[in-house]
Image (cartoon, rainbow, N blue to C red; front, side):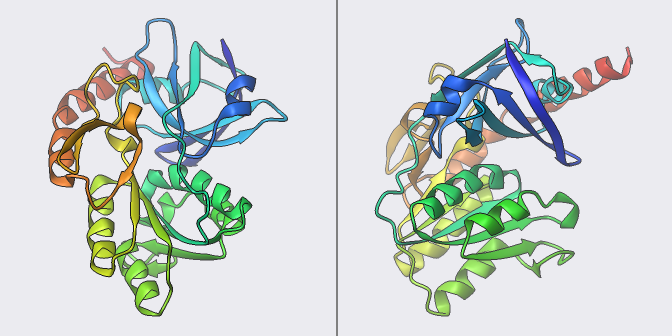
Amino acid sequence: MFLVTKRKELNPTVTLMEVKAPRVAKKAKAGQFIILRVDEDGERIPLTVADTNPEAGTVTIIFQIVGATTEKLNHIPEGGYLHDFVGPLGVPSHIEGLKKVAVVGGGVGCAIAYPIAKALHQQGTVVHSIVGFRNKDLVILEEEFNQASDLVKMMTDDGSYGEKGLVTNALKELIESGEQYDEVIAIGPLVMMKFVAALTKEYGIKTTVSMNPIMIDGTGMCGGCRLTVGGETKFACVDGPDFDGHLVDFDEAIQRSRMYFETERHHHEETCNLFKGVK
């Protein structure tokens, strides 16, 4: 059993938890993930390590409430317990030797982008963070990005906070102003990563994307995170989650990611009704 030492709602659909897991906290690196189960009969779900505190032995996870399991997870109180918490898993992000990087995060993907920005900053890399949300109410981790970045561009679709526009607008503006990046690292919705990669390809800038959004089981056995990269079949959980954004077949990944949308929505509604006592 793993103790939840902190629980904080970052916005109406996104929650932060710190979990007591000393061995994971000691070994986890930016870009890796854990697999957890809420209870003995629960399904396994992968969640990216958002931060660690090796001294306190805690691991921070940030999740969006989108399905039955994340709904159950969201009801675990501070002081409660998770049944399983295994990791770190996945290949750590390759950030060694980078001098200047643009980290692009979208929505809850910013929870994955932040630890990479932090790791880059700690090794002395110049970090320009571009983070985007639909509106002001959904903004998360603003203070953390400010601390881990030399420049932060905050974008909202409706202009209710920061600058109005998409993350690609801000990235293009920076590139055309003369900023020269060793690499762009993009993490967020599949459509966002697709268009970031399309933009950077025009300028010949190496681009890494994180395919966490399509991971389901996290072990490579379910096949749910299968994708095509440079014409070859890969699995996000065991071969990634980071891949060359210019080689990923995003159209295929987007189509496959929508296959179980209605089923997951139905299970989420059933779980919500259980907590509300509705039959």
